[in-house]
Image 1 (cartoon, helix red, strand yellow):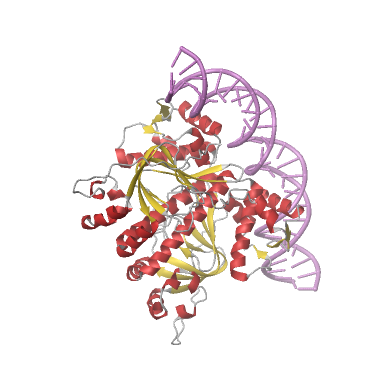
Image 2 (cartoon, chains in turn brown, cyan, green, orange; image 1 turned 120 degrees about the vertical axis):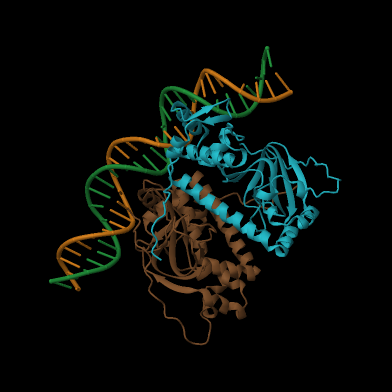
Length: 257
Length: 257
DNA sequence: CGTATACTTGAATTGAGTCAATAAGTGTGG
DNA sequence: CCACACTTATTGACTCAATTCAAGTATACG
């Protein structure tokens, strides 16, 4: 179907030979768990990291593989998914630079992770990174924060999958992308969708046709405007947010302790 | 709708005056994060814990409340849910004794937690528990493991909500309950459903009618047999598992490292 | 024992899925 | 640079699984 069974092919990234630590020069360090380390400790990370580049559709690992490595995404986009025996697929997340991957501290990965377009990652052997966590509690605390945030996002996604209509799902999806982009790139720039409509459908629990129809409806209502097929401008963010089905925002409720 | 707006009412549990630490006598300690502490450190937990009892339908906290406490469930069942502005509800989980509650290390709770039937919890002030985490890394590690497991469960639930049919969802739900019960009570005993059909529907992204029809179908096919309305025997676990839509079980796949 | 609540069942409706036919991109080689 | 092939996206017509609406029937409770 849409799960290319290619294994990861490593295009080795030239190892820096200058004195400076590669991690010190890393552009996503501050956002990722590595940011928990002091500059002077970065060589400890450098010592166990392998940099890798992956082409479109190549898997970092497959559901069921022994989980021997953890990853931090430094460039590109990764989709993470689970599958039923008959091929029905559910994408549980799209990852972006600085995102952490492989958190399941279990023997096997519970999902497959695949590159969307060109991707770069830092790979850490699980055992060695765990040893570092013991040594640097700040890093472990940061990992806990990451897990906690992902859990909150997963709960939002359950609300979406269990209770939202098709347009609401698509609107929510666009809003999330928009907010993430605003954080990184600032506003104004058009929103780029690196994933296919099939990916979006499998993320939102819809078919591609329904995704397409929902996008068309948002276009018709002048809420978004497409530039090509995978770039768009959000013309009316307020309307989009309204359709997304404003979760109750609980403006300072009274609390009886 | 079905969200009683009652605040928690504390039925004080008599504080033990014997010399022994209450935590030392706790029946769920080993399964919960408290199990990470040595016996000699348990008084540190005792010092910050408050025991509470809650009646059916009473909330521990509401979505949007300041998250000042963390909880461990010691008896009963708790439902955790989020809601859309128009009242659509999604239950993101049912919690059982030894389960941890309030993990979101954020300023506010992202969901509401309510007692189903009589419930007992240990309540810890967030700041004080976090201080303990700093002191006892084993406990923090355990918390990370909890978060990691919950994340895996959340991903399974996304697969269910996004891609499974009604009967598959209900079958999966029963199987999960069965497996959890097997772990605790051993096999044989009938399965008890403490929650209403409405709860089940809101957990599975279905209406009560569809839940009821699915259960009827499983009854008709002699896969389950009800004893009253909230207790049932699972007659044919294999068939149930088959319907639940066997996630690929990836029997030792080859891995190219 | 009656009343409220929770659950089941049936009939009609509908939102999203399926099937099928374009249309719009994307990439390749001549 | 264009023509062709191929993939990806859109649109339309029809179907169907789950919802909605509407009775009924258990079950629990004061």
